Amino acid sequence: MLTEKGMIEHTPEENELIEQIRILVREEIVPVRAELDAKNEYPHKVFEKFKEAGLFASLYKEEYGGVFISALSNIIICEELSYGCLGITTAFFASKLGAMPIEFGATEKQKQKWIPPLASGEKIAAFALTEPNAGSDVPALSTVAVKKGDRYVINGTKQWISNGGEADFYTTFCLTDKSKGPRGISCLIIEKGTPGLSFGKKEDKLGIRCSATCQVIYEDCEVPEENLIGGKENQGFLHALQTLNASRPVVASCGVGLGQAALDSAIQYARERKQFGVKISSFQAIQHMLAEMAMKIEASRLMTYQAAYKIINNAKDRAKYSAMAKCMSSDYAMSIVTDALQIHGGYGYTKEYPIEKYFRDAKILQIYEGTSQIQKNEIAAGLIKEAASSKKL
Ligand SMILES: Cc1cc2nc3c(=O)[nH]c(=O)nc-3n(C[C@H](O)[C@H](O)[C@H](O)COP(=O)(O)OP(=O)(O)OC[C@H]3O[C@@H](n4cnc5c(N)ncnc54)[C@H](O)[C@@H]3O)c2cc1C
Image (cartoon, rainbow, N blue to C red; front, side):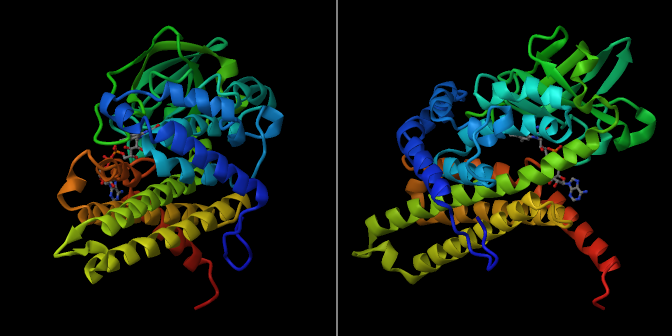
């Protein structure tokens, strides 16, 4: 938890969770991550271990088959998992991302139907918002859902969908009323196997290679009206915003975990590598890089918990804090892996050390769930809005 003084103090239950995940990272992730990365292979076997450990359950409320450990479980789990592999963390959390529009907007009956299989790990979800011509510009999306009797017919293409092809269902954002722009967007649940639903080729990515990413294609894809989240049309944009506000601090926690892994790796290397007859850790230039990295990690961690705290408490300025944490932690993570690789010299540029993978993986943090530029737009919008209603000046 984050105390009133802004300190992070974990409860005994949170510490137990951290310990449990560190064991999983050591025993189940680190030994396989390079191979999964090289083969572009989805982490099915690792997810079996997560299921046994109840890790999927810890992301959901008890009334839907989950196990409550902490309101900060998402943050804690994703920071620790990212220490091991950001690709596995992305695949794991993409399922929760697919569940969030249901958690925020669905009817009780829908929640009871769709969430328990995610909590048990029996099913995986995906969040399908981005399109080939609607990335940062979300309101430009053009996938349509047309009501025909008691069914919706969906046509369109979604781009860059994490867990694409692997997920059992896709929370898909579609236009139900074109005339209303973003206020005419609804979210529908589309199950894998539905006629008309198909997938593009698996993307051959720079990093997070074991997480599946592909196009999701809808061609006269019909679903029953019960699959409309919340049972009311044109609520989808709100559910998308709620989801992104809540998930951006989790992306920030991934930057913290990955950054910490890179720093630890750099320290270890600097203590072993000798040049000019001494360990390179004795050079002030190296020490300063390590110090900068450590400061960035601590600052990002505090900002992440602060943003999570704002989300949990439904604070008015939560969107601004969520964007600040995501942007700061992602940009710092990229700078940390760059310096950590520099400390490894030529060896860092090869697959002999994990830093090469950390470097490739980190870049995605500045892109998905809204680029760093979009986060800054969000932060500035928050600041300007606050200034307009402030009595300070
Ligand atoms: C590996 C991966 C996984 C993903 N997973 C998912 C997923 O599961 N579900 C999903 O829906 N989406 C997913 N995405 C999509 C991701 O959220 C988008 O890629 C991202 O929002 C950026 O959109 P874009 O790629 O179209 O870039 P663009 O929007 O085309 O942006 C290109 C550049 O222009 C800049 N730019 C654009 N608009 C502005 C502006 N107004 N001001 C300043 N700069 C701007 C951007 O910052 C960027 O640098 C994923 C993407 C990747 C690569």
